[in-house]
Length: 348
Image (cartoon, rainbow, N blue to C red; front, side):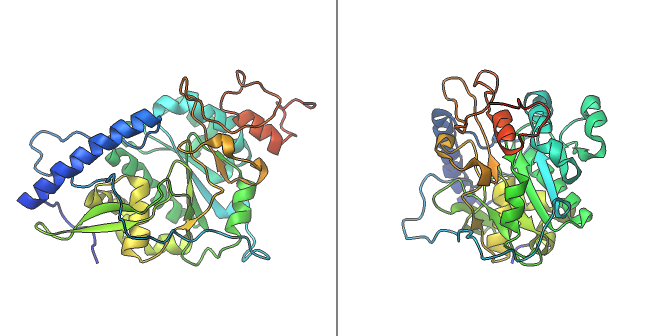
């Protein structure tokens, strides 16, 4: 079983594989631009670099039948009773979104869950520091959206969670609305001491990657992962088992080992290295799906939005605010869930 070691180089065969991988990456980027999606930005190699990133994501999947990850299902009663105090909620953001995105979350769902929520960003913000204190974590990671920058933040999220002693780690992005009540109801169906990795994949097939076994040998692996754009959760028991590949900065080394970003790396550790499995839940949502089809807002765990001009993608919800006043629909969602909020109109 692979464990983090020193740097790696590729053989001539590996270089040829890299060329194919880079071609696939370029095609993927074009596809994402055409569909309005986004995933991560490929980093540029530094001067004198001798290591070429091999993978990466392929556009063709295995043609053999593949079983989907198990779906979460309701149970007669909770396995364990949970409260907000059992959660460690990590919100990943960047400096340029502090006002544009994070302010909205602070006004809505974070306002009711600040004690459990930590904001992981890439620069200091005095205004935000005064508002949420030590719940603002300046990671000093790069502000870019590269694989390394994303993995840098996730590494710190993981370490902070383990140090907290909480039962559950839940990661969301700064364009997610988190319904903590529904989250607690979902997680109470599982024991935090067991191996639980729950979220929603953004792909219909396991992702494929090239795992480096030695300087001259590589192996193709495939695994499911929960997209970070919809949020996902890890039990404390499973997080402890991830330590050899995730703690104290080793998460970044693991991400480099398969040349994939943070959310994919979590899936790789859980499924490929530990032999676990993703529990798929349809209650998590990202902007990569058609959010207009989402119903039963009260029971969803996460929601998202995209307000790109001519490609608006939000949930359909009636509320006290017009689309112009509330383009993300997060304020309307919040008033639907918490009508006692001071800024929600009393009659609508």
